Image 1: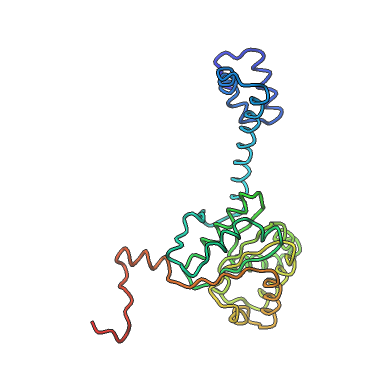
Image 2: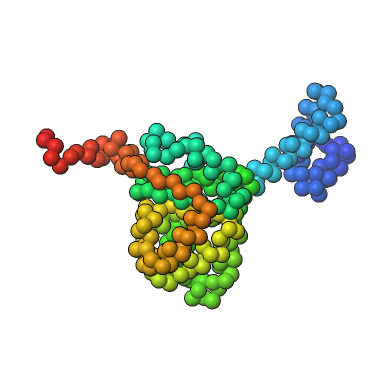
Length: 265
C-alpha cells in the first residue's frame, strides 16, 4: 500500500492482505482502489481484477522457483532455436513434446546427434516448458549424475538419492556418451532408470547412436536393459547437421570452410 496518509480502513485492508499473504495486492492496494473508483468497476469485476493480479504474481514467483530448482545450465526457449539450420528436425514433433503430454503419460524422449547440433538447447527449452506447466523438473549431466550416485553409494545414502531423483516429473540427463561409464556407474544408472520406469519421464541427450550404448556403458547386457525400459514409451529424435558452435566460428572467420581433400585450390 502506497497511500501517503492511509485511512484506518486502508490500514485494515493492508493488514488483511498481509495475513492472507496477498502481497502483490497489498503492494498496489491504493492504486488498485483508485483505478477501480475512476472506472466505476462493479463488485465482481473489481474482485476479478484483484484476484487475477495476485494469481499472476504467485504464478510468476512459483515458475521462477521451479526454474531455479531445475538447475538449467542456461535458459533458452524454443522460439530461439534455429530450425532452418537443422532441417533434419521436424518442428511439429518438438512442439508436440512442448505440450507436456509425454510427461503426463510417463513417456521418455531421446535426442540423439553429434556435438553442437542443439540437443541441449532443445532439452532445456522443453524443460522450461515443463516448468511453465507447473511440473517439477531437474537437469543434470550424465557425468554429474553418475558421480552423485557413486558418492551416495559410498556414503550409504543411495536409497535416499534414488528417491530424490524419482520425485521430479521430468528428469533431464544431458550428454550420455561423452565420458565412458564404468560397471558400477552403469549399474547405478540402471537402478535409476528402473525406479523411474513408467513413473516419471526422462529426457536424454546423447552423441552416440543407440547401437553404441554397449560401449558407453561397458556392458551390452546392462545397456540393453536400460534401453528396453527407456524405449518402451519413447520419442526418439535423430538430429543430423553441422555444429552451431562451428557455424558461429566460421561466421567470425575463425575457421576455414571445409574443402574436399581432392579439391584443387
